[in-house]
Amino acid sequence: MKKFMMSMASILFVISLLPMNAAAGETILKLATWGPPKHFIAEARGQWIEEVNTTLAGRVKIVDYPGGQLFGPKDMHSAVAKGQVELGLVLQPSMLAMVPMLQGVYLPFAFDNLDQVDQAYSGETLAIIEKAMEAKNLKLIYVSYTDGVQVYSNKKNIVSTDDFKGLRILSASPIFSEIMARLGAAPDTSIPYTEQYMALQRGVSDAVATSIVGGFFEKNHEVAPYITKMDMSFATVLVVANLKKWKKLPQDVQDTIITLGRKKTAYSLAMAKGWEQKFTADMEKLGATITRIPDEEREKIKQISREVWLDWAKKNGKQAEALLDLSLKIVDSAK
Image (cartoon, rainbow, N blue to C red; front, side, top):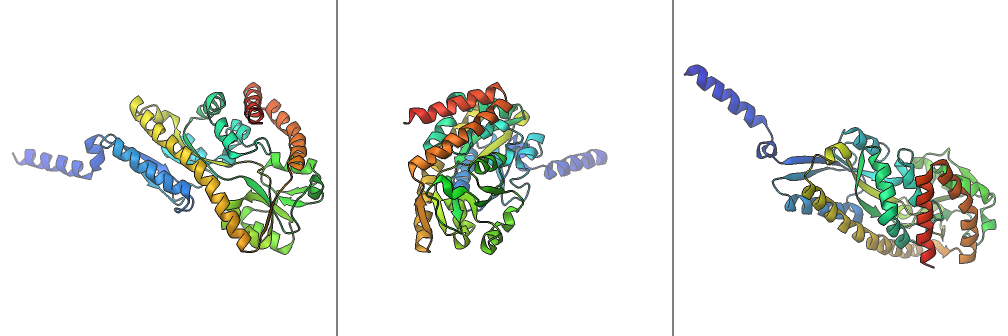
């Protein structure tokens, strides 16, 4: 009897160490995130987590690990693909080397506005992107949008392609650097992101390409107050899952998670536009001079860029060529 009681006590002790959700059969999905908690993308993601957890209560629970405490944007895609975490927040430009197809919706000057990019994340183009991601053991859950990339200069606003000649512009993208070089600029990839503000302030560099919202929070307008809107490209932020772990979830659970997530995609589209307008006005109040490049000059840049897009597609195979063709049809149909 004594041995029986001791055995029962041991069993109860072990059970007490188990998480309550494990005992209840609830699946925990860890979500690794980074970035400011007050950004609209983060707030919408919090709503998505709450909605998923409420809808799938007792079956699935997403637990957020914010602030880069697990992984940051540089290595998030790799961590999720390896299964080190079930879900992760990925910055699209950071994972172009792993999934080159994502460059197809991030080619400089290929898209004229955010609505066209939104179209590219649907239908046939989305199918190509998803297939390429799944080949790397990643499942795309939903997309969040940011506003377009513009030029901040400490010299002057850009009114023609001639203004790029000799412009020492900071760059982290090989494709962007190639386009800038063809325009006669001097792209500089040697200066880390954390040192770009000082490079602009000291005159080591003349310009940097970043978004209105991002540039405001980075305070680039303080050292490069001549801002020219030209909507070079539109970075996206993706919630992705480890594909092997994703496939273990029931189909109705997968459908719920994705359906609720894609509502946040639509929300981010509207918010990205609204925030660009707000922070444009805020920087103008702080003394920045903000203009838009003339349409005819931007069209010249697009024609120069087209050769770079075609080179990218050719190097990355038939799927890349199909993706570029479909993307350009989206742009053409909007004219």
